[in-house]
Structure formats: C-alpha cells, structure tokens
Image (cartoon, rainbow, N blue to C red; front, side, top):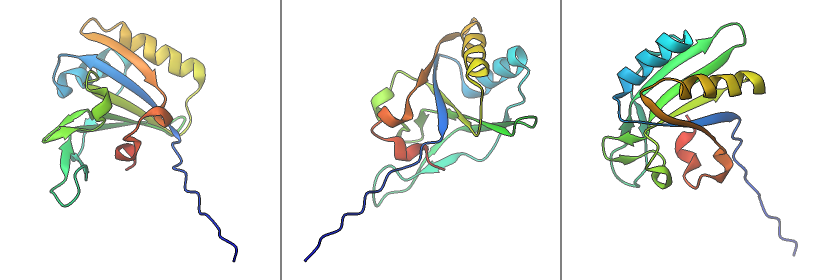
Length: 139
C-alpha cells in the first residue's frame, strides 16, 4: 500500500520589522505619522488564540495603506492582555508588518527613517520564517 504525505507550508508573504521603544503604542504611531508622513489609524484589537481552550489574547493594532502601491502596514503590539504575540522575541515591543509589495529601497529607507526617530531604540527587519510562533501573525 502506498502512503502519501501532505506537506503544509504557511505562506508568509509579508515583511516584519521589530521595534523596540519604551513608549505607548499611540505615541509611537504618532511619531511615525509625524516623521514618515504616515496615517496610522487605531482599529479593533487583534484577537489571537495563543492558549488552547482559553479566551483569546488581545493586541493593540493600527493600520495604514499606501494607496499608490496598495501596500498595507500593520502596527501591532507584542505584549497583549495576557501574554506575548511572539514569545521568543520579548525584547521587541512592537511589530510593523508590511503586506503586499514594498520595494527593497523603500524598505531600507523606511527602517532607516524609523531608526532616526529619537524615542525609538531600534527597528530591525526580521525573517518571519525563522519565528517559531509565526502562526500568531496570520490574520
């Protein structure tokens, strides 16, 4: 009898930037809006089922869309109501997720501009495929 195996691979078609700062989420979004001419808007919190058979954990979420290139930006808090979105990256306070297309030069300029904001300690590009709890980023 032949056995067939189903290989399931999650398509992680986004760019992830980890941001470290001591500021509150609304303050960081205000500074990004001010310095980078973005327009992040607060949306409903992101509900993630981290622990089985318990209530979901909620994370602060802001969104912005570049209409010219149809690129979506999501600013997500790493620390939620009852745990971390990405537990293996507890030093990162927030994540900037970029969905759809962004040019490599635009991405480097974006990271550089975020790092120039005085209140932000660091902004670093992260490879989502190397994160153990990457399923938490699928929404």
